[in-house]
Image (cartoon, rainbow, N blue to C red; front, side, top):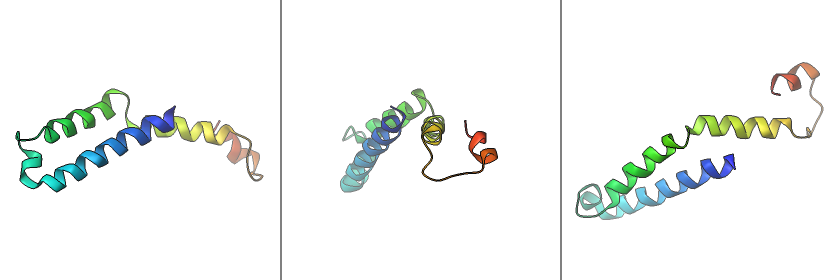
Length: 80
């Protein structure tokens, strides 16, 4: 779930940003809804929880899985 909460908003903002670039000055004006869409979706990334919180959750979940190689116990236990 954390991976989706990171990837989907980034993809949406990327698409909106490209559309703004294609529309030029009209993309940041009230002529198109792109500027308001960008602002709303950027705010949603914060409302849902900052990306750093989701990245931390994802990182901890990955580090708690079966290790691919042997780490010294001191290093492995730091991330649990």
